[in-house]
Image 1 (cartoon, rainbow, N blue to C red):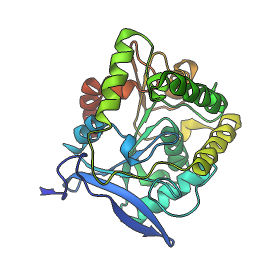
Image 2 (image 1 turned 90 degrees about the vertical axis):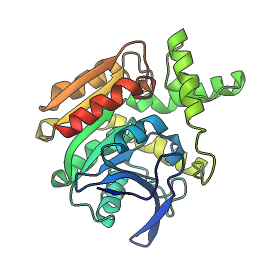
Image 3 (image 1 turned 60 degrees about the vertical axis):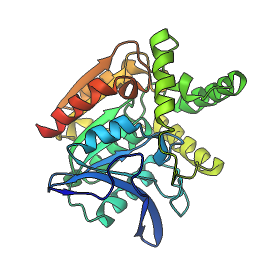
Length: 284
């Protein structure tokens, strides 16, 4: 098997690919063994360095993993899309520019919403999907994600903590400790770090979330691909009940996993359990 140049998420180089004249920043690592690549789609306000190294390295141990900044986000050029449909179009264009005929998608939070749009727009492009900490169009509470985020930005400011400690994790002793560990892991990459999201791009994403939360529900029964749905039992951003359960009910070939005493970032808190589960799902 041929090894992609980098050995871990901490030192994989950032590369660029031109898509219709726009430079997209991306990183890839893992085994290029002819299997289906796994494309990661990230959350609100996130750039490349917001991925948990344990999750990326864990999945890259068995797969060719690709992460990227959407148009106008982080180091990618162009103007950011302000709809989920537009972000999905960008992702499809990026995937095809990379030369991939079919991919697996791992979408976290807003990334899971983009993944749903991708599979509905271009079903032949997707083999399998992992949807974490997310919900369907028109799902309960999704149009309030911006308000929850802004509240926790203030909580973080006044307590001198990263707002992800509040947004992604419970306030139980286990949740607080998991949040601290996750935030420490995000600092493991010390060189060639990505640019932070701009405020204008952040507001574009908030508009996309508002519109998607107000959108009429769509027919998810047309999704025939195997789908793994994962969340913590206490997600404040995209409420676990009903959203994760609603996805599992409406997508025919789906499996639902709910982690106890965990919030929006349940896959990061439980990475030691999630990664083997994801690898088994992708291998089936």
